[in-house]
Image (cartoon, rainbow, N blue to C red; front, top):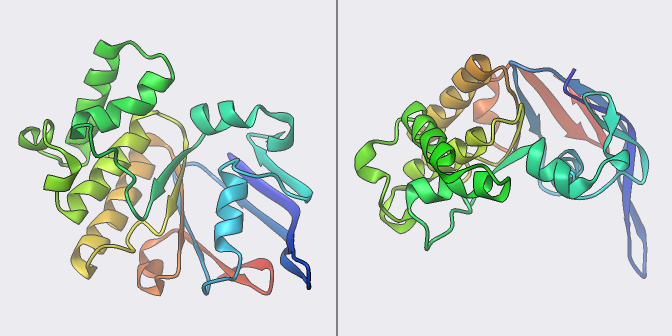
Length: 221
């Protein structure tokens, strides 16, 4: 088991009221599978993602990575070394080339430039970004190509936990299918756990396990 949520609760307080977003979430995730967390806007999907990514901590309960609670970890190191996030908006750095974008997280981890370059090129090939694109800037790439570069960047860190936040939200149906198929293939080939947070019900049939966010809980479908 790479990730577990045990009795996780989280709420937001304002001057006027308290909103209990998560009311005791329990679920687990394994390597080699692609999971989906679906639900309406405001149902708590983004909160779950933030907790799994180590951006914040649960107010009650535990998020455990390989059995260790994130509350006992250095969260900056956890985010850098244990988990990779793929965003809907791609979040590629506009002043870096395609290959430099993939190398960037490795440089933060002090991986030597030669090794980082070789690894970046390897994963760009895996996501079928041709060499002719490697020295281009993100603005010159299509949406589907940018999302593939973002996936290569996540893979290049070689973590075994990949969180994808609405990875098909800015793509058409054809490219959406390709991205989901790619994530499924990569999860199997690299023994990764991929967790996709989405409101797109059209991707459900392609995933291994589906959790639905409903009334503050994650329910298996």
